[in-house]
Image 1 (cartoon, rainbow, N blue to C red):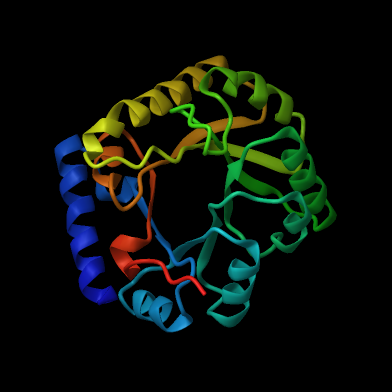
Image 2: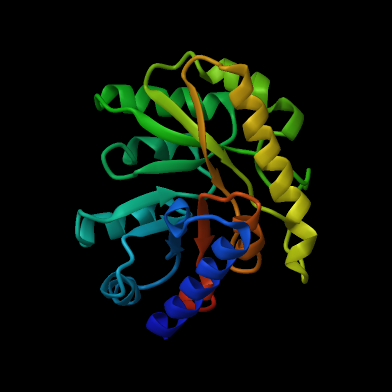
Length: 229
């Protein structure tokens, strides 16, 4: 199942890149393996996938410790401050930084480990009460505040768009995030490097790619429905 699903996802990514006049190398597929067993991840690895995303720290740590260390792990879910200490040395990038206190803790824990945390700032573009993230009009102020931390490097922005039946409904969400990245880049804020947009999931990643996504986070489209115990 995973092998066939990945072929389908890859074809859709390539087609979206073609429509947008983008090179396929500009988009990184993050296989979201939350709740999925290691056996399914290994099948994805056999298909050439090396970038995986997890929503929970404990699950990321468990899979990191069990699988090949050459894989790249991304923390894409809401991150609690008391779990940050488990991430240095294991995670390539944290996509879900959404508060000053969390940024402080990330800076502290990665500094203690002698490492730099590569992060994305989560933006609640749609203003949904049920979602985490910084409001779109507060992003610049937030970035200026966290730019002081020496063990954090900001690479871009992330958003979780609303769940919709028609992915076209989320096009403006993705477009607005891209515009915000361009705007922030024009400000030349010290220690802020805007080159990544993490946006688009199973239902809408093609539209996200057309609007500039550099990371797409696909779980169900690769591994099937989530398994909860």
